[in-house]
Image 1: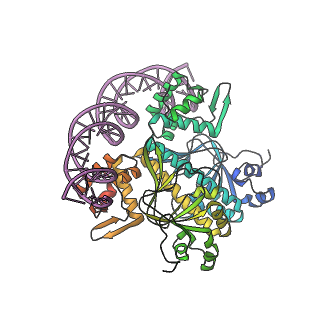
Image 2: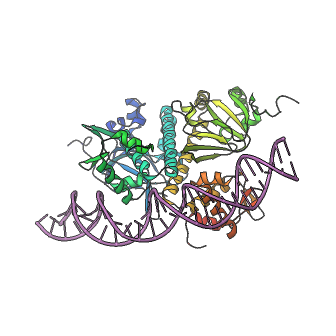
Image 3: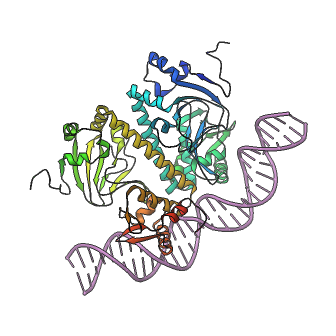
Length: 244
Length: 244
DNA sequence: CCCTGTTTATGATGTGCGTCATAGCCGCGC
DNA sequence: GCGCGGCTATGACGCACATCATAAACAGGG
């Protein structure tokens, strides 16, 4: 088996192959030659389910891209968690590393077995300096993330639980839903616990609400994946429109 | 009275003077000559208390610097508001304008009579392209804002009202507090309503908590300004440490 | 195939804080 | 100096949601 194509074992690091780099949207503006030249800065690595890539408070060393799997960026308080962002393949996180100073403001934990690609913070800063288009795209994504964080602040402060949960499902579906004969299935396998942490509530409440929606036919479940059956209704709940 | 020094009247716009530009930290990396060359892109303008600089949903035309006064960035839902950020002199906002596309994700309203300096979104984008240090600083401030938004999400989802209010006061004091013989005074004149919108609660609750803290000697009020009398105690409340 | 830990489920109970109502206060304009 | 609108204050009440408890369903692993 040729070295360049075998999968890395769980705790193994290897220099990144070009295909992996090509799959990263943030690096799409680089030519094949440029990618090949920068390749040595990246390390690919597989991580088991449930592992922490870093913990809140750690000194930020690397900037990370997710190639496969799912990662949650999470903050904790008295044993309770809130998921700040759910990372999907192609996304990056750990941006603080590229801007020096401060500790990681959140922990990063895998929800499923995952494969990540890492680059040292200073190296990524250098890369941004060499390729302004990359820097520009980072900036645009930061703005995007800030807007989403603001939206979530608004919902946490001003909206009741049900709209928050409905909104969470719809966001997930919009970001990475796969169409079904009837409805849209979430590609991410989420527990009620995860859902609760995304929406800012407790497991029990998430379970109760989901059960209710199942009974009412707004959602159903297929092979452990949540399927949005009645999108219009769910949107009505998310926006607190009086009807159903 | 020479034209260059008089104050602009309420609805008047004028080309920016260099002193104003010099007072903006984001432009600190530009030389006097560079500032003079870019000067024509900026417009200075005074706005009355309570005026909206733009509303949520408006097409984003300008990038704005605050020279004098106070501005709140706010989102609304069913008549209730949450303040996403309190803008102080030297700060900028309306960043979306520089990155095209989407509508303003929040409204900007003055809390006091204010003076702002505005530049068209495209012009600011050009400026960032010409001065990479400015772009870099924008990026760093975006990261900063994102971290603060995440912290607020955590507190809204996981912390009770009192810690949130305490944290809000401490943040305000840290950002722009002026030392007093005993304690630190907030320089921003805030109503309980404002405080409630910053902490994600209602006026009544903000009033009750503040009254309680006044009685307990944690804070007091001088000339309409809140003064933090016992910082340590307030920090204990913010971090939910069991004692007082 | 059984055993153990995780996830889903549902009821009973409690409470933090929002809501509603009323009133005193303070500054400001005429 | 009087009246008026915004702000602060305080009590009474209710409810959305957390908390606590218990159990069934399910998944994985030796």
